[in-house]
Length: 452
Ligand code: MG
Image 1 (tube, rainbow, N blue to C red):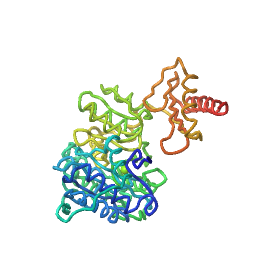
Image 2: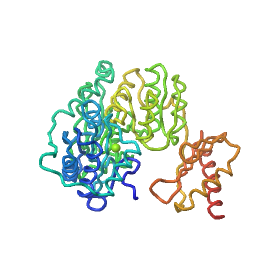
Image 3: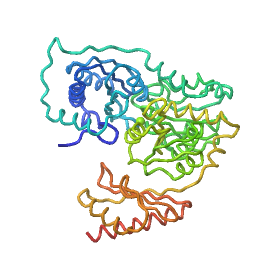
Image 4: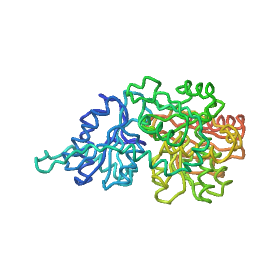
């Protein structure tokens, strides 16, 4: 059986993999699993969103589900609605940061979290069997258009931070919504926090006329320039479905996600008086150093936001996140939340007089080298086994692939879940250390591959 779900739900190019037929059948399968109970749906700003959502709703109502349609909303807004209401699950029509031709489906459990793999497999089984019974006139579900989900989401964000402390500072913030779902929420959150807000690309538009909806430095040149030109305290940008947030400091420097993750993790742990932070094994040691200094500890997971969230839920962790700007605040909900990440960053700035760049300079500094080795899926197992034998005697972590620790840093070697490659990340205290470790392990991997 082929898989339908990847590491972050179902994704594909509209009209190719991602069709109304697929969306309808996923809706039918999920609706069967949910036994016709109430569910919620929402979508980001993509042009294909209404079409695919209508197909999902047709499938869900055919299975007897009562559907609350929240309309356009950030993913964490839909997730919060599901968590707070008497619904058994939900579907978000979104392709997050992917280009405009993509769309996707995130399927949620009653907590608003993405489904565990076992439930995804049940949906995949029903989907591929494709043996759905024709719906009957007296068993189909209704559809309700719910208003106010975004308003409630905005209020929920404000409840999580020290609103007065932030308001007093009247921060000037440049915010880039990427024409995505944060356009509905984040500008209003910032205004409610007393900020002077300069927005960019804050009108919902699924053609993404401003820039592609992935918050990479090269897409954010306008935002970064505007921070400098206006003397802003902070620049911020969301991805298309607003579950992530990245920052620029007051000097117009792009803040890499591992730095903002470490800063926020340290703040949350210090505020809580300790606790556990959950993050993937690929995260910078900067995170663990900062968390330990604040009196907390770190638990590692395989790479993938749903795995981090699930681990946090199971262990009642204090905070979690990824180096791509995905930050999870469990007292709010067990999902990444871009708007809350932004509000907490303002709370951090409000907690002292130092600027963001000064605060970031105080974090431990590490350097990362990333690369990849082409490797057919058939020989990955052998390559990884041979590498494990080669590094026998060293400290290793097998949470995801093989993470090998050296005096000067670590190297993580991970077969990709979707491509015929093995990913190699190395981290060191200096750029030279990181490069040397990378070259050493990559050399070993190439020798192993050549000997097969
Ligand atoms: Mg996203």
